[in-house]
Each structure stands twice: as C-alpha cells, then as structure tokens.
Length: 212
Image (cartoon, rainbow, N blue to C red; front, side):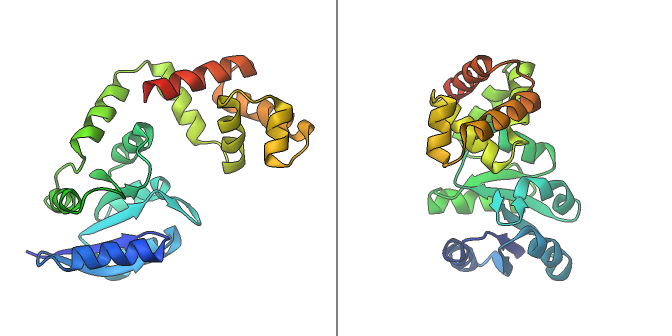
C-alpha cells in the first residue's frame, strides 16, 4: 500500500530534499509540497494525503496551532530543527502521531515516517525519553512552559536575554530599543507567565534550561 504524503515546510531546499528522499521509496508518494499554514489547509482538502509532515515554524504562524485542525482529516507528524519536549507534548496532545527532527539520520527518518503511516507513534527513542521525563515535572513548571509558548517573537527575544542574565539596559542595547520599551515588555511578560518579578522569572528560566 502506498502512503500519500504532503510536506509543509517553508525552506524550499529542505522541502525538496525531503520529498526526493521519501519519493524514492516504493511505499511513499509525495502528493504535494507547500510552505505555509494557509497552503497546507488548502492542500489537505485538495490532495487528500494520508500523512502530513508539518514544520513547527512557518511564515504565517506556528505549525502546532494547526495540528488539531489537520489531524481531524489526516495523520500528522511534526518536523523541526528544535526538540523542545513542551512543543512535542502539545503537538501530540492535539493529535500529532509524532515528531521528527530535521537532522535525523536518513534511515531513522524513513523508519519514523513508516511508523506514522501505520498509525503508530513516531518518536525517536531519545525524544520519547525526554517527553516522558517532562511529564514527570511539576504542574507549575509545565504551566510556565505553556505561558512562554504564548509570548510573541519579540517577547521571546527579551526572555532569552533575561535568561542570559542581562539587565534591562543590556537587553535594550542588544535589541536596539529603548530601556523604557524593555521595561514595558518585561511587565507584560511577567503578567503573561504569572510571575511577580524579574528575578523569579530568571530563576524559572534557569530551572527550565537545566531540566532539558
């Protein structure tokens, strides 16, 4: 039986290379290649794939935001250069069958795609262990991670610099914005993640990094 695969990734070279690698296999057929959430929503209806390989970071949004919608009509596996267990958990909770890193070895990639084609969980052994470990963490830490996911790209840049121990002035210099603007960002970030002050935020960020 041939599995019809739709690839959604915004990097043409990677998308084309993945399509070529999978298309060479007799049990796979590439039925489409797209580069955005808008395109994948249309292609799922038009191409009727058996499996969608969906990138996490796309120009018009996060692939994780479309998992539940796409999974309602076909199987979904996330593909990404990142391997954050929180993103993997969310994707699978929304219906994804698995999560494959873009730097996976060719044979491992084929093995995982075939598992997904069979309706089985498609995770590398290492990723499965990391997800399992993250599920044993405290609820407040999991809630903190989910809050971080809801931040805007610019807010995440500020958070990343805070995690490095930079002051508001240093953050302002690094991002070429005013110190007052940084303070406004920090105030909003604290509100979103439910932390009372900048120091507690920094501590939670350090704990999160150590847990990975």
